[in-house]
Image 1 (cartoon, rainbow, N blue to C red):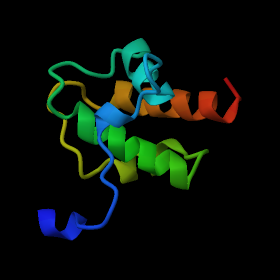
Image 2: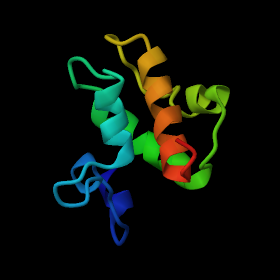
Image 3: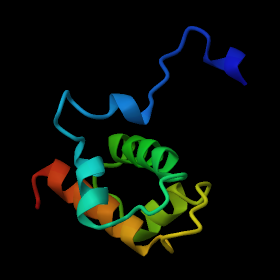
Length: 95
């Protein structure tokens, strides 16, 4: 509920980029063609960002578990998972 956000910071997809520079997750989603209709993309990106802030080196299984609450009917998730893992590696400097 909206009242639960009172006094808290609400992060949205619009706040992920730094000016004109996309967040590494946003860039990875484009590079991996990990979006189609765009309906689920904001939720998946924000959830993925939260995961990488908590665990900068997740396994594929951890990414799948973390994103299990996000429904995507278009992509089949494989490109999404690859994009998150690629962004994680890039953010760690391992890419």
